[in-house]
Length: 270
Image 1 (spheres, one colour):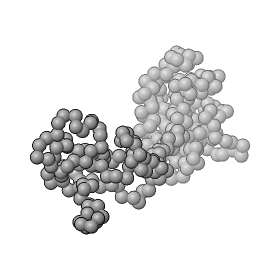
Image 2: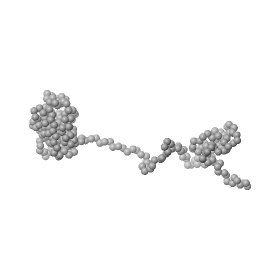
Image 3: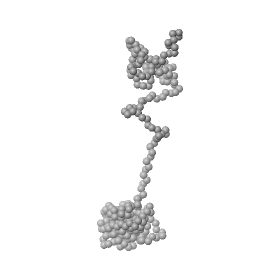
Image 4: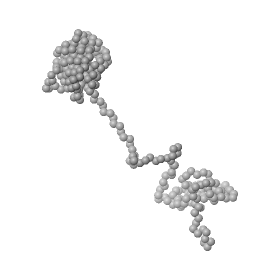
C-alpha cells in the first residue's frame, strides 16, 4: 500500500471521480506485477519511456481510459482499455506480442468510497478482493506476470575441506561394530635408545622390546610365572622393567625377548 499511496498522491489533482481512483488502483497492480506504463492512447510517442507513474492526460476521457504498458523484461506489451458502463468498469487488456486478450468487470462502488476521494486512507476498500480479481482476470490469462526483481539467492558455500583432502581416496574400512585401534603417538625420532640409558625406565624410545610397554592393553602379569613358587611381596618394584621367568599368559601370540637365544648359547667351549 505504500507504493499506491505515493502514486495516489502524485495523481490526486487529476482524481475527480470514483472511477479515477479505481483506475489508480488498477494501474498500481500492473506495476506490482512487473509492468511499467508507456503512455496514454493507442499510438506510441517518440519520447515515451517506461514509468511507474501515470502519464499526463490519463484521465482526459472519463468514459474510456486507454493506457499502454510494457514488462520490465520487454517480453510483453499491453494495451489496456477501461470502459465505464453505468456503475461498472469493464477492463479489456490485449497482449500485443501474443495477441492474447483478457477482461474483467469491476463494480466501482465495491472498491471506492466516493465521498473520500481526497483521503487516501479512506478512499479504497476491499483491496484484497480487488487484487485477486485483477490477478485472476488479467495477469494470469495473459500467461502470468513478468516476474518482479527478486533478491538473489544466497549461494550455497562449499564445505571447508582440509588441505590434504583427496576426493578419490577411499575412506578407511573397519569391520562393522568395531573401532579402529588407538595406536600410541609416534615418539621423538631423536629419543631412540633413550630409555636404555634411564635406569628408572621413565623415558621412551628404548631399543629393547618390553612386553609390559608394548602399547597394547595388557592383562595383569604375574612376575612369578614360570617359577615353582611365588616371589615374595615387593620383589619386583612397581613400574620396574621386569622380564618374567616364563611365558606371560597362555596362548600369547606375540614374541618374548627370551625367544631368541644369545649367539653360541649351545657351544660348550664358550
